[in-house]
Length: 526
Image (cartoon, rainbow, N blue to C red; front, side):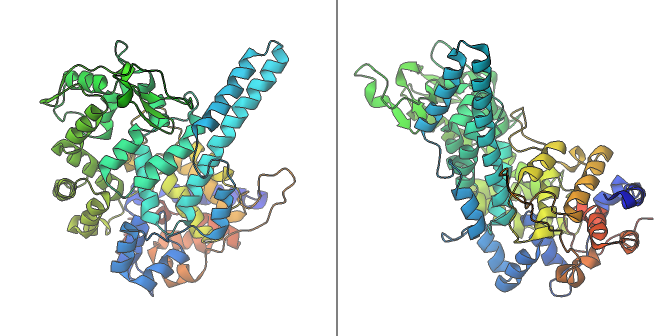
């Protein structure tokens, strides 16, 4: 903060922290003058955060139509033009071709083959920078979708599934692949059938490279991907599958890999009809184990890629998968320990609808357990939820021109995009994110967002000029509703603000803003 207020901010930030983490988790929000507290809480729970535009759209449609539109986005739903223009200018926006991946790999190989040490060093740095640029562009696309897409529930589910089917950008050439993985394997199926989503991740080179199935072949078995499919992606730990099932699934997945060459591999005439290729994905029958397998109590005859579909059908339709996936979705939206009756309702819908994600979400939203959760403040925001909701509230439909500050904030808070190294994804529970160190970082980020443009409106070009801006959070949305979300302690701190920027910072640092909106009045700390 500015030097003349740094001491006051430190004292005030410490005072707010002194309310206690428990107060931050149990604080809450009341209603608005023109929209009920319940509806404010509903909007906040299903989006990346309340802003004036989201409230206006909700009021225009009404609760039922708004929820239905979020669950079933129309074909003509589109990003705002300034956002779409930024994305369309990116080289990978329309998809990543095998030729483009080949070109990057060739650049890396050419750099390694240079004999002059300095030239090799320069060329390798250029190659690494090119990969970094593609990962940065992928994160920019992800952030712009999250901030401005009208289909906010799809964006929240895109992040959920990206985290559920996690890959880490620093392995091999994944910095080049993560954006296409999110755009085409994840977002495209985020509200569709779970089986289609699972198959889309299985066919993407990012997943095959990350979990090593690209090297899984008959005689060189690699169980990594098979194990994670069952343990993390579908049935879950302790659901009844055995090590023998993992081994069988690994054998079923032999030959499932990546091929970037334009020509088909040379195969024996008997195997050629078994070849499957789509983009960079390949099922190579010459690398497949054609033995019969016993998987989840069923015999799967050696038949090539058909075995994969048969095995995935058994997994997707296993009751354990319905329970595991439903529990994770409920944890994400409802509470750290979602009620078992709610999970059972969602799992029943999952089974009856053949894994229709939108229908599972509809069951959750209509359940009394979900409605009851809107009246509590258990949903402490994780870093992504905090940063996105702060930027959405601060700038609404004013489109940021540089997402690098947001990428850095997420990284500092420990939830950087594509940066979770292990396949389990980031934790979904509040207890993982509510430590004092996390809070102090959020205070600093609140200052950056609240007191100036934070670099969000300075394009990355070398000669670009900053476009100064700071948000006006004391606006109609605040006075018409959000003001009622605040405790007397927070209102007292805000009354001491010496400028609009100071007020913004304190509001974004408040206990009430650290949690999702509540559908009842806040509890005053004792």
